[in-house]
Image (cartoon, rainbow, N blue to C red; front, side, top):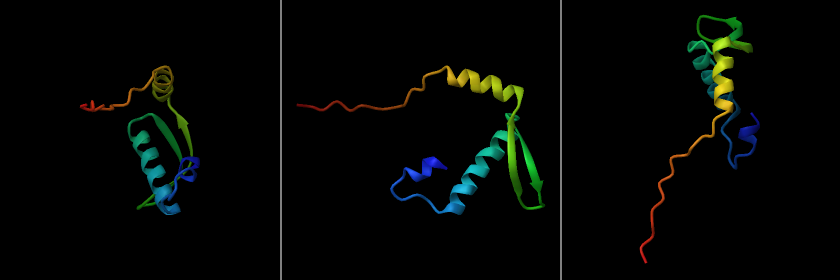
Length: 78
């Protein structure tokens, strides 16, 4: 949540929580995380997460890579 504190106009707290929850659920669906908490018919209440062995391998690999941003630099004509 520290990321949102650095923004000039951060989204509402409920929107922040929803985006983080969706991200965690996506990682759980891909078997990279195991989520612990309570499940209701409508919603997950995730209280704790743990990396799976597959998630650990992927995290180690990603930490060793340098990301490249897809910048397109337009050359100015003189």
